[in-house]
Image 1 (cartoon, rainbow, N blue to C red):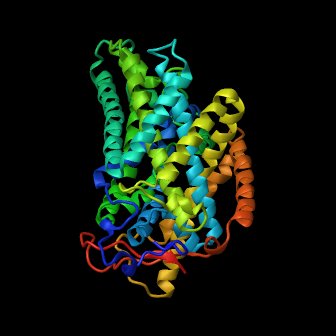
Image 2: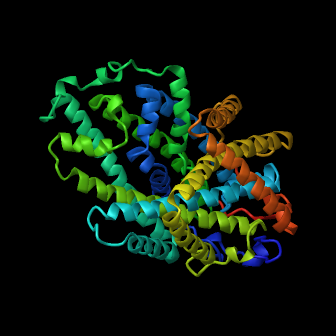
Image 3: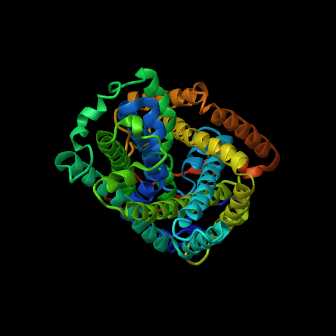
Length: 496
C-alpha cells in the first residue's frame, strides 16, 4: 500500500491473492455478517425503547414499523449494489466521496464513526447499571473498565474471532425474542394461568381507543422513534472489506437481515400488545419481563437481565468494530490520520481500536460526571447521524446509477428492485423523516444538534484535510460478468 496514495496494485502485492495481502483479512462469513447486523440493530430499542413509539401511535405503530422497515430495506439494497461492485472497508464514506463530493465522504464517515462511539458509551454505562442487579455493592466504574477491556481484547484478536463471538451474542438475544413470541402466542391461545386471559387477543389492538387512537399524526410522529430503532444495520456495508467472497456473501446478508429485523419487531410488538393493552405499556418495566412473569416464571427478571447484558455487549462489540473500520477507511481516503491504516498480522487496524477504547473510557467518565447534559447532546447527535448516513447512501447510489447509465457501464450483479421509482420514493421518505424530527417537539433538539455537528465538520474539513483528502476516492469495480457465485478478486482502490 502506497503511503502517498493508498493505492493497492498488482505490482505492489506481487500478484498475491487479496487474502494474503497485508491489511484487513477476509475472515467474516455470511453467518457472521447476518448476525452482526441483527445484533447491532436489535437491542434496547426493542427491549426497552419501543414503548415510546407505542405511546405515540398506539397499535398502529405496527404500520410505522412495516413502512420504516421497507424503507430501510431499500437503503440496504442501495448500499448492497455499491458494496458488491466495490467491497471496501470505508464503504459508504468512500462511495460518498466518489459519487457526491469528498466532503460528503468526510461528513458521513465521521458521523457514522462518532455515532458508533456514542452508542458504545451508552452500552458500557448500561452494562454497569445492569450488573448492579446482582452486585449492588460493587462500584459502577469497575464494570465499565472490565467491559471496555473485554471488548478491546476481542477486537484486537482478529476479525474471525470477533465475528464468531458476535454471532453467539446475537443468538442469545434473538433466542430471547423468539421465546417471547412463542410464550406470548401460548398465553393468548391457552392462557397458562395468566391473569385476565379472557381479555387477551387481537381485540386488544382495537379495544382501547381504536387501532389508530392518535390518528395519522400519531403514526407519523412515531416514525421519529421507529426509524432510529433500525439504526446500526448499515454496519453490513463496513464488513465488506473483510467478508469472504463478498460478491456472494453480501447479497445474501442484505436480503435476509432487514426482513428478519422487521419480522422480529412487528411480531414481538404485536404479541405484546395482544397480551397487554397498549395504554399499559409505559416503559417503566420491560414488557418482556411482565409477559414471562404472567406465566409464573418468577426468575424472569434475572433471566432478562442476562439478555440485556448480552444485548449490550453484542451492540458494543459491533459498534467498536464498525467505528474502527470506518476510521481505517477514512485514513485510506486521506481524511483521518494515516496511522489508522496500519494493521497487525491478524489484519486488525490496531490504532483505531485503541483510539476507540480510550475514547470509550473518556466518554464513560464524562457520562458519569455530567449525565444529563452528555446523554442529551450525544443521544441527539446519534439520532441525527443515523438518518444522515441513510440519506447519503441513497444519494451516492442515485449518482452511481446515473454515471453507469451515461458511461454505459456493465450492469450490476445486485441491482436495486423497482428502479428508479422505489429509490426516489425512499429518498423522499427519509427526507420526510428528517423533517418530522424537526417538527416533533421531543425530537427537535436532535436536528439542532445535528446542524451544529455538520458546521463543526465543515470547519474541520477546511482546516485539517489536505491533498488526497480533497479528491474524490477512486473505486474500480470488480468484473461483474456472470453470476453471483462467480468468485473474483478484491478491487483496486486508490485515488483519482
